[in-house]
Length: 281
Image (tube, rainbow, N blue to C red; front, top):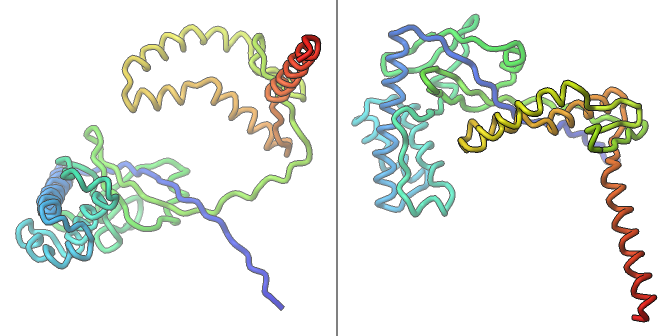
């Protein structure tokens, strides 16, 4: 008899923990990031010149020289070599010298980074091990025990973050017991088959303000502006609201607009066919 196999599907999430170092710890973190990226730029130049991009080949050829020249510990040197190898991993990235910013993100593994007691982390720096407090939200705190793999040290706009990857089980799929119809319109943005209309005075009141703000963000064109545009999207908020309603009712969504469009196309084809018949074609 064949044993029945069960699979648990997991998804990866990223949580950012805001570090709160004192003045001395901040200097140590800055010097560490700067030194690591200096070593990465040095190794990147050698790899590009020799056209050798594999992690093992770079480790074998330049490990001891990197440690001696930049004063890195064994594991920090290994992470820097892996960082350079990852930068050249795709073949279409090998036609140009890869350079690293002064304070670009640096990966840390379990040998040079760990969580300490309380809301603290213990991380390697050029000044030795540092125990640094962090702050985070309730959801991030719940996900910390599921951390997997490396942690990236980030320096963003004067703030320090530890970016962690966590693996959690996916939520159980919903077994639908019916269909929730959604009719998209002009006066009302949408109306579902339960009788709820998704529009009203509030939407109309903020629409003009959103239009002006959206125009300003589109003109900026930056990555932050695009993220803000996505967050402002009324259609996205509307979809999320309808989706939460369907989950509560354990129903799937049928988009009435697509049904109407299909009927319109079918009727147009039928009218065209009748017209051709009248012309004798």
